[in-house]
Image (cartoon, rainbow over all chains, first blue to last red; front, side, top):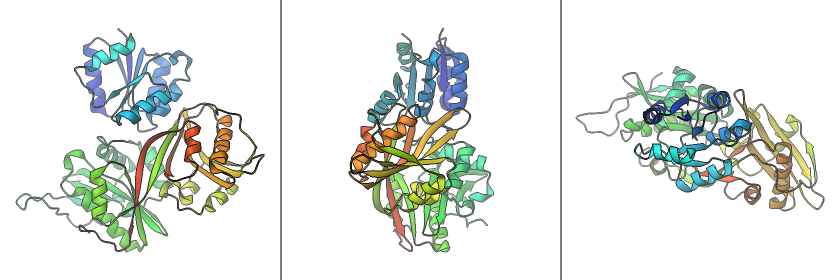
Length: 120
Length: 304
């Protein structure tokens, strides 16, 4: 099963995402800040990255722009996770080269299908 | 010294008791944890780590002795910070844990910050509220704040300029950059004002002379986050001669010829700033807006 790197600073959100994805058989890696997320992305080259746009050490847009510099991650789906208003979220993810976004709080019932769609 | 026990408006049978303590009594790690908890459900959460909050306190002259934490039974319920400069104070990082809202905690913290501002004798208090944060906006209006202007927060993803930069840029020494910043006549927001930028280590900038009539300067921060990440931030543009849109585009083109690989975020550009069209033309995207609000000393509101 694919490996998903979840970069999320809020422990409850991270735990929920981890539980839902593990139940579907994914391998889940967790990073609680931008720097750890970047390091884990370089080291593990996950199949998909789920990225909170608000992180304590740097924001998600900056992280995407640095992840896209890593040649092995050039084509890795990076999905932003945000509570931002629809229009702002769409503009930001397009500008920064994310493959899409999932709105917070996640819809637990739909979430695995959303992730699976980005991995197809 | 502790502020008196706050007794906000709740049912008389079940008063909600909490204590306001100066933020200086807490470690930066404790303040960071409390701040992050208060923002967890915000429209734009903007969490911080301790290093960033410490930097924030330093850059923006936050006085922790005049900032407050609301606490009950050993738990931090909310906090608010006060920036202090000779001509004004600045209310910032004000927030309350989601489960503790609507108990008067935010109002009590704000009142303590306003009392501290009065004691310090500053002629006005400033703050910014994110557009559409209606509860906070209403609280500030009720406490005598008036809307001053709209401020825009912008981002630009990495990328080269869309056209070759015209004119000749001369890069500035730090002292020259600070001298130019100090010449700005328009009132700046707290975080873009010269006293904030004086605290920034990696300040860079250049002046540009265009072949036709045009001259301006751009000063910015080359900002490092941890081991890997560098971004451009805190852009200050000024047109000294010529059309601000043309000069602004030329300034930005020079910036991105030199730093095509860096992401930029810049906060609190006045919504009427004549360089805004240039920023949009160079690929900036609006993140959100803030409303700057001001309160003259002694101006009360119904709750003050």
